[in-house]
Image 1 (tube, helix red, strand yellow):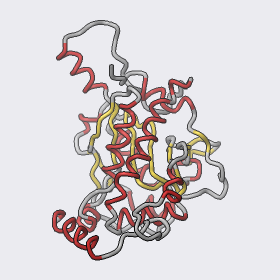
Image 2 (cartoon, rainbow, N blue to C red):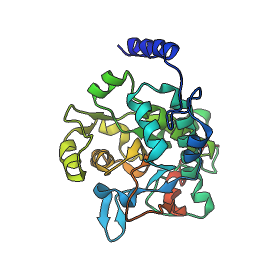
Image 3 (cartoon, one colour):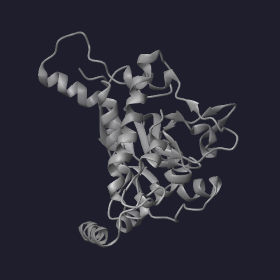
Image 4 (spheres, rainbow, N blue to C red):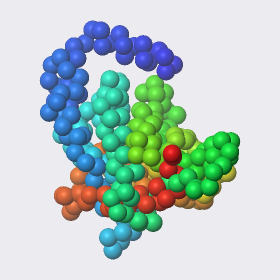
Length: 284
C-alpha cells in the first residue's frame, strides 16, 4: 500500500508543476524566503501549550522548536504531512537536526537542569570493546517519535514524524551525545484530533497511547519528537505512558508550535535543558 501511494505521488509530480509549499512560488519546492523561517535558533515553546501547563510558570517538559506554526511554515507542514510533499523531508530534517544539536550542546554552554535528558559520558576506566559497546547501547538517549495511528499511516503511506526523529538523533550525535531512534510507543484507533481544543484532545487520547515493552524503556532517558506542538495533549499522553513504564522523559523537539498570544517571544532553551541528556550518554 505504501509503495502504491509513493508511486502515485511520483506520477503526480511529473504532471503537476512544482511550487513552493510555503508561498506557492513557481518552479521551486521550498523557496529561500520561506526556508528562512526554519533557520533561526530553536526556542522553548511549551509555555503556550495548555496540556503541558503545571501552573506557576512550570511545564511538564521543555519543548524546543525552530518556528511558529503560522504563515508559510503552517502551509508547508500541512502539505508535507497530508499533501504528499515528501520532497520537504530534507529541509525539515535539517531544521530538526539543528534542534538536536542545540539540545545536546546546551549543557556545554553552562547548563545543569535536571529537566532534560542526560547522556552517558564514557568512564575514565578502560573496558573491552564488547563492554564499551554494551554500555553505549544501554546508555544511549532514546529519541522517540510520537506515534501515528494506523489510519493516518495508511492515509499518508508513511509516518512523516519518523524523519524528524531520525534527524534529532543525528543532531544529538553531532555534538557527542549518544542517541538512537526507538519506537516503543503505539497509538490505538480513535477520533481525529484535528480541530479539537485542549481538553477534548486530552480526553480523546486517554488510554490510546501505550508502551509496547516497558523493559525496553525502563530507566532510559527519552527525547520525544512531534511535527507540531498545539495544545500539548499528544506529548502529554506520550509522556504519561513512558513515565508509567519508568522512562525519564526529559524534553521534546517539534518542527513548529502554535503561537501563544500570552507568550509572543518564546524563551530560549535554558542552558540547563540538556544536562541530563549529556551527563551520561556521550559517545567518544
